[in-house]
Length: 246
Ligand SMILES: Nc1ncnc2c1ncn2[C@@H]1O[C@H](COP(=O)(O)OP(=O)(O)OP(=O)(O)O)[C@@H](O)[C@H]1O
Ligand SMILES: [Mg+2]
Figure (cartoon, protein in one colour):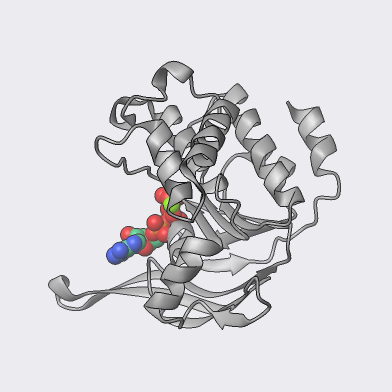
């Protein structure tokens, strides 16, 4: 479903005499439906930039991101037109950012409702599913009508995850989704990710957390010195690993 070839990203800082900052270089990997590729590596090695290049928040400097769409056509996300990216983001792609930016004065329930109504779901169904997902990620009903600006870091993160998962994307990009969660919240989130994998969603996730990697990942790569080091392995018994580790 996703095949990444020789993908690279450098940043040219126009306001700093065209200084060049290296993002990452010559990244190759692929993911089939229902597979999760975990990416690890030290701070600043380019993990978030890689996800942003796939989602096209950043324009890659070189390489290809071949993605097979729902209709069977293959599109190169590295060179797709902006309107094609907007359409794919609205219909097939999901992204959980590393840092949640709060929409001002929109309640948690309305955020999840609006995400769905924007994709054609009727308001009643959207509100019911919004409540279901808020419950699934363990956000107290007392907070559903509150503005997330005042939420704790973990509550914001869980809302962010629910907002991406509720659309059931075909390709989901996760940037440290379990980073600031306690053991219980982590378990809720990991179970939701496993459910979505079982429905065929392909995922690329940045993780530092060994339990999350062993529970969720089918393949593992390490980014070191801005390159992808082949350290891939297939987790055959992800669900057994979850039972053992929790
Ligand atoms: N928009 C940008 N403009 C200039 N440089 C950038 C930009 N985004 C990222 N970088 C640089 O690219 C490098 C990789 O950053 P990135 O955020 O991808 O790292 P990371 O591996 O996700 O780190 P962390 O684990 O701390 O989240 C860093 O040196 C960073 O300063
Ligand atoms: Mg990052």
